[in-house]
Image (cartoon, rainbow, N blue to C red):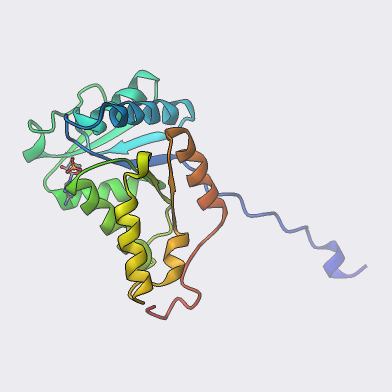
Length: 210
Ligand code: AMP
């Protein structure tokens, strides 16, 4: 018998685990009630799946709804709140909350604590957070799945802008395989898992800039 025949069969690589999901979403209390309900539903779905919610720590808007949904369904939640925003965004006291010094610190901890990101409808703050996350993905600083919840085509204008930068040869076309968009909360976790399992979608020549 040859050594090769005696060699143990290679074990298939285990799929990465989805332990924590970071949610970016609106803090506004005047958001479409359907979006607030979707955020709450997604929180509950995370809890049901045993996935921890990582979020900005607020008790209002879609943020608060998502945290309430997760907490009430028995899920784990970690909120990260800059001290200066504690009152304005009404820290959700029922869950574990880290109080930090700055927006940068909040954003970095949210990033580090999560295995994947859900982007729900939001305003300029949500936009700021997701564009940075996508730019880090484009630079291959991470390979964590990014999935938008885009009811009624909410995020379509952003997707069109990204496509426009691709058509202008300013963003590489492979970039569009690094994120996904779905229409209902139920589709978010399966889309994240599909991105995790499809393995690294990346620059074919990692050293090239485009
Ligand atoms: P908005 O979509 O404008 O309601 O903002 C959603 C959340 O993002 C709010 O909790 C904001 O405090 C937060 N946010 C806005 N800009 C930043 C930033 N630069 N870093 C971290 N969090 C931010």
